[in-house]
Image 1: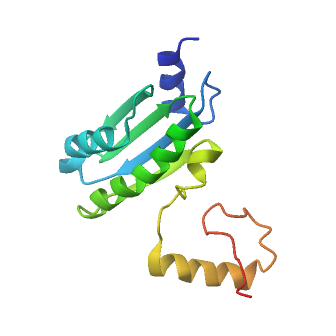
Image 2: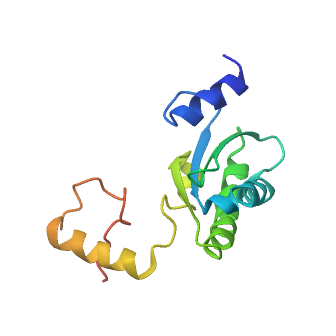
Length: 148
């Protein structure tokens, strides 16, 4: 399987095994912002030696990106750049969700980004109903860390 085929398969299912580490992102934007969001995402996220796959649904305002590369340092830089992309998208009412990513990327780029007040509310609810953090730990709400 060639890398372009693997990226195309990853656009369909981010869990698809690719020959290199893969990050899959889903951007949700206004339909009128799709082209600009693709340009912004590619301009912000794409680094040298990285393979990129992009699929856009203009009517739904959805952009799917699959990024692939070997270098751990690249993934760390990409994690920092995602915060910049999220700020740009948020200025137009959009958001970026990480569907799949290598550990070096996940460490710097939470799946849902900064959830702000909503995230704190979700965390308090999770603390009430799942005090041992056993149900999907860290998946939707950052892991509960009691203050010392």
